[in-house]
Length: 119
Image: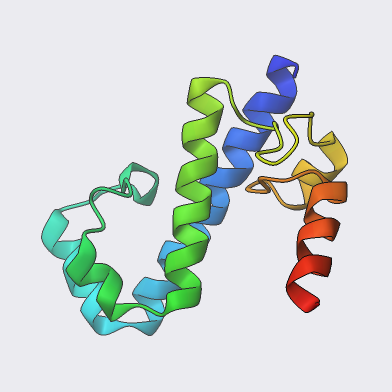
């Protein structure tokens, strides 16, 4: 994976993370209070370990899952595992990652996984 694409994905993931956190801050007064108590100046600095269990209890499951997926993708960017399918080990296409930057499976494995869940 070239550095330009990697940098673009990091930017995109950080923006997604800020978007989710901003939505939570605007929609949930308890979450807003918790973030303010952390003294965070820049939402990009809020790490998953900063968002502890009691804060995650306040927010919806969907948002919790999305934040965890974004954080995990940022971690994979750091450790060199970003863009590698967790199922088959092959490279996830740039097109798929551009559409879903926190994808963990290539399109073939994702399709197979969804097919198995439906049957």
